[in-house]
Image 1: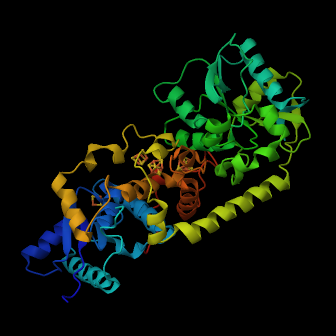
Image 2 (image 1 turned 45 degrees about the vertical axis):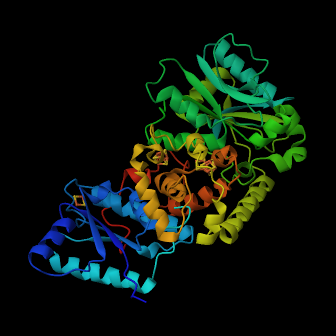
Length: 140
Length: 358
Ligand code: SF4
Ligand code: SF4
Ligand code: SF4
Ligand code: FES
């Protein structure tokens, strides 16, 4: 049987993490193809239901990447995202679902290496966990 | 100590209805919202001077909707210039506190909180009809099994967030009318020129303890039968996707709910692909997305009022789910929905340093 290849959905802020991803590409560094990046205007625009829908319809892990505290172009989007992700993880924990499949990271446009390392680590962590039992469940 | 008045009451409800009558007749209020007989049950009515009071029963053991929804209806799109008071129960007051913070309710309204001995389910309404409050209060034991689980497990028995509080639980037939805010004290003084500083009667231990025990039972049920993927699939297996639970929820005030919006309309092909991943999928889709998404949106403000569960046609234990999830997410921010108008709403603010490492 082929090795399990996790599907990772990444919600990346246009002003930092998505730019880091671009930079990684142009400087010919590699990050795992498991990660499917989705560019968003700010982590503050990522509603929890987007993350949940990804987890319910096929993603094995979701990573949200935003500007470091103090650096959000809309001033407080990342702080709000941090609260929302904390709530999301708590909801999953309380429901007895795996909150470690969701991760929030601060990666600036200049941190190409951090981007690559983070994506590798997260992909490996999810690979070890195995298939997301929530993905494509009957009730979705 | 509060500014207040104590009255020996033969009929608690008769006395409270009398107070509504004098508020209106003496022009202290231009309108009062209270429960009034409607068919086999009760409905909220906006009473004005001269209204027929015979069918008014502010303590009727049935809530057709959260009064928080009425407060929002009356003030979201502009508050009336006239003075309006709403006679509400503690769970409704807690939802009103949340809606004030979320800018859906204007504090210019007057809120009068009534002690609440519990209310009956809508199922009881359709099967038997709702008794009046005197009958209910005199024989609460007879109705014990039909009281809404939200009421049996309502541990925040009283708030101190209203303008006026009316207390009678455990007082042996005494009715206390207490001013709780500046404008509430003013109102009580106008209503009773002989009002004086009096002590609020303590809540009997029995009530607090039994409600705590019932809440504990719900949480144990949650741990054993709801938590975990298989349990969850089972719990929501018969959900009809009617979204009644969201429509009646006082906290779900969005004009258009995301989960009812066209954002979740997909091409047919999409469903075929999703189904192929596991062999089959249930339609209509997005059942879990709706429930888990809704929790993420509003559990931070869930007041455990249980209207969601009462409105569910297939008796999904929604109160237990939302109360438990609500308690846990609120604890993250040391928040308790409805506790205080002064506590900052956790989704409206943040700290620069918190929640790290994530
Ligand atoms: S579920 Fe979310 S989007 Fe829908 S009404 Fe409630 S808070 Fe609003
Ligand atoms: S989710 Fe249910 S218990 Fe919570 S506030 Fe809404 S209606 Fe009340
Ligand atoms: S009211 Fe009950 S059946 Fe309707 S959507 Fe809510 S849980 Fe499902
Ligand atoms: S702009 Fe990057 S997180 Fe807000």
